[in-house]
Image: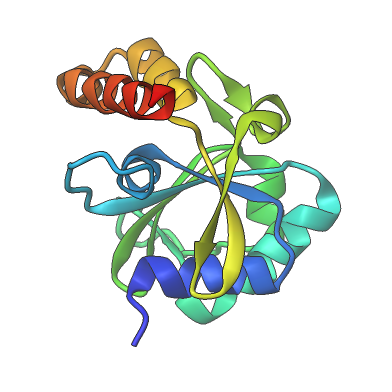
Length: 164
C-alpha cells in the first residue's frame, strides 16, 4: 500500500506533470535524517502543465488551507493560472505547490540540476541537496535555518563517500 506522498507522486508522474519534489520530502529522499509533515512540489508554470496538474490533483480533493469560513473552495486550473504558490490540504495531508522558491527560482531554474529517483516504479525529479540548502538559507525562516546544519552535514558526508 502506497503512502500519500507515493500516491501523489505516482499520480503526477502518470499524468506527465512537469514537477520537482522539493522541501523536506526532497531532503528525506536525498537521505537526510529528518522528519517532515508535508509534501512540497515545484511545478512548471506553462498552461498545458497547469491543466495536467489540476487534473492529476482532482482525486485528492485539494482545498486551500486556512480558507476563511464562507469562502467557497475552488481549486482548479483557473486557480493555478491566477497564483503561483499554494498551501493545500489534499486527502487530509499538507501539500504545497510552489511556482517560485526563495533563492533558486522556479521549475525552469532547477530542473537541469534535479536528481531522478524511483518512486513506486516511476522516475521523478527531486531537488538536489545543494539547491535545497540554497532555498532554505534564502527563505531565512527559523524552521528553515534550524534544519540547515543537518542538510549541510549530510551533503558533506555524501561528498566524502563519493570521493572513496
